[in-house]
Image 1 (cartoon, rainbow, N blue to C red):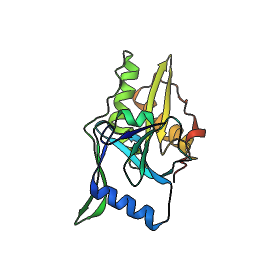
Image 2: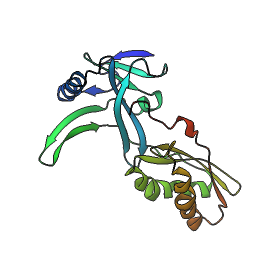
Image 3: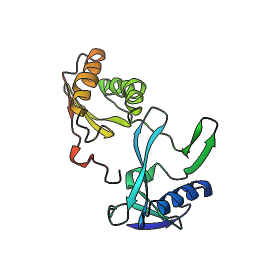
Image 4: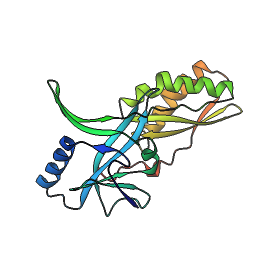
Length: 198
């Protein structure tokens, strides 16, 4: 577990630091920091999860940023796409909350297979934007013969209703647009879907 200093990964503004530190102190959450991760994406933006994380419960592979009164924990996969991002706490007439300004944008994979290209376009334009409202996403892993292999992430990983979502929603839609696909196979490791920092 490597500990970095700001802003080697992402910058946390003073307003955000004050809110986080104040909450941790009020709740008596010593030895607790925050975790930020990318849990999904649309065609042009990432979706994020933010929660509390004890240092003892962090993964050895986590990237850790020392923010003074607390630490920020980020999984390696999310860290790649959070370089240069800024976490701020904003107050507007509509309300207040944390906001992430990230210069990085999702890059959809390029496929040689025409069927894979069609599926990717469907995921980017229709399916993932719909799942993003629930904090979920679906990633196309491969297309072999007449089967599409996908991996679920964010709120869909470990979710009890993920099989229903995949079979009744996603697979049905894919097969409507690409009749050559006979089955959508879920290769997700759902045992890793629980968030220990909720």
